[in-house]
Image (tube, rainbow, N blue to C red; front, side, top):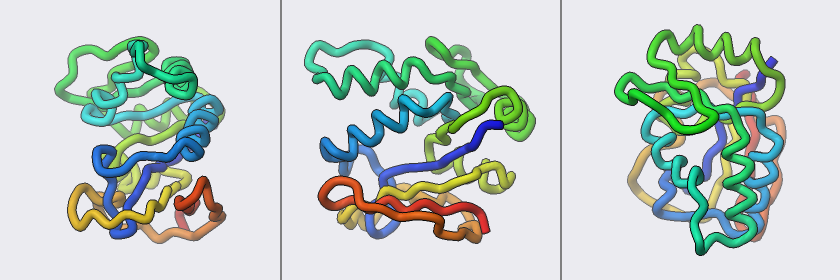
Length: 176
């Protein structure tokens, strides 16, 4: 059975914004290793469209960027959207019942499946479908933006924490 994990970079004041801060080389390498180990990813439309950047090789990429792209391309992708009409390679579009689609996904495959994006995570949290939350806490204060928890905060229990790179702390929680 698949394990759904929602993990994102977060500012100290609780916001996620890929344009405001980025992982250092050590954290990016960690994300490559996670992507290589994951069997799939569930996306909402906006996050999927951002991540489609990794579908096409760029001439200025370094070895780590190429490794991440290869791992991302290899994953099964489930894209939840009512507005998209098609998706790219190794992706399946779901416009119907979210709960049924995720239940089917969890039953079909074994391994870790990333949940990408706070709005999608909110919907899956409301349905009690996320198995683990990973917060990559950066020493940045944004003061605005999209919060990591886009809806009501679920009761959580800390199961692990560690430092990655120079300044990032990863906090892993499961539903309490």
